[in-house]
Image (tube, rainbow, N blue to C red):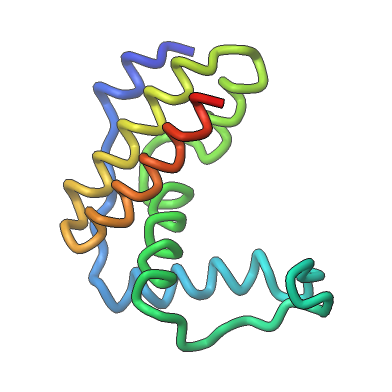
Length: 122
């Protein structure tokens, strides 16, 4: 896998804000509905009207998984085979590309990047 080539050819599909929000919520609901929640010790209830920060997180997560031309499991696959530096570089490039394509998500992309860098230093 040629990570520099992936980064150079990285692109993000831009969709309308309301469509992104609807797809992000649907994606979240599909992934979490019916799962057991350790915090509440009950079956996860989907939050239909999340706060702005939570919604931004869902939008960035959806964009990472579905709106880039990079396969969703690529970063995880790189980490599994010990190419962590390249995985981190690709993940950072993806978040920066999302922030460029969706300026309203810049702060959430920065938050996720900062969180990622904290875990790199453990």
